[in-house]
Length: 470
Length: 97
Image (cartoon, rainbow over all chains, first blue to last red; front, side):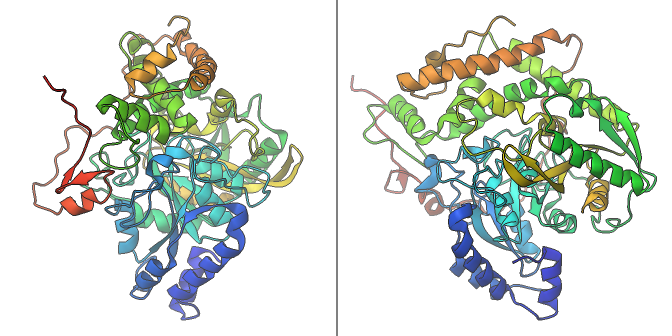
């Protein structure tokens, strides 16, 4: 299935294919190729075909199957979050709002994609349920945490997919797999039905083959939802209206802090070439400073685990998910259910989050990190007084080898440096493929250009991404 | 901020999480390293800076008070590990006098 969502919509409207044909073709490619890639945890062709039979092709996404990260609830389907805790006995009892909206736009949710457990990770290696491999080099990670969604789109076993991004979990796997990944502004898309990791950072967004496809999906899922009090009332603009208007006259900032030590030379070269291309199309490139960049990782790894430790307290073995056998008493039930159900990264973050919120440490860690978050947010506000958008790499390197950082979580966290700040500041970010490079014995590995915009600036972000797309 | 000195088993107990001795040993080194990195925040002067809890705060939102559907008891109970007579079943939590 190599055609884009936009192209397939044209084929559907011309009667050249049907929703059922698309589903059967995807299912065949999953059978053929996904035993290697491992992008999917499950898929239910029968249910999807039943939905396809009544698909309304006149709707904006009519008849298009979309793969769903396995932390988004789709009525009656599994929602494992890549965790043993929910792997066996959990079926979603309702649709997430993004699923309701996708259905209202005519799309068909099809397939559950792998992820780092509860979206905690940057490689999809923290999934308790299987390994996902990068379709460009099966010895390498797809990135994460939406690694299954990115790999499926790259492997053409999905036309498009939804992911979630708490610190880069859409943009970084998109970069590593050579697809487009958009994290909307905080509050742009309802989080209702997304299993919460860090509630002040999480956003749902599309992973697609093209920028136009991402715009079409954002159009369908954006907007206020009474079920998510943090979703904003702001009107949703037409994301396609100015998509092809180009970048002439725009001011694009390049933060010097994002091009320092630790960046792979191939990544730097590709990103600089993409920046030059935007300059050649008439954009003015301006060097800027985001002076608190160096504190983003420390800030994030206080705030995100703090929120996670609170959110994951709901997994107590009582109401749903895993429960230990023969507990001695209620405390034993909690402790052992959680010990057995959670994997190492989730435990690490629960402990870290509990620590920074605990009496005697709250002010030194959590309260201080929230203040530094303000400084990081102000860096962007200041920058956007001068520039329309900010250009940077998505990740310091292309996809690394599977297993290379298995025992070094801090090293893994540090690789999130370029993506975390957008979540802390609540601004939108997109990853667009900008060529390939050789890295660490691998050849032709994808590199992503990150474009960051001001809060609710998705339309202009997509317009720049369209111009940057090669 | 002082030098990190996290008591892993104590904090895990606060989080209602059993850990094996091997996990405690592994997490101790990893968490010390992470907290060591977090120490860099102590170099910043944050006096007078307002904390950010949410990047786009919405204060006191109220939705329309209109009736709607919520989960039925059977839909809810379909995911429970143990149930009896239409109720969640849990271990006995009160001891005999």
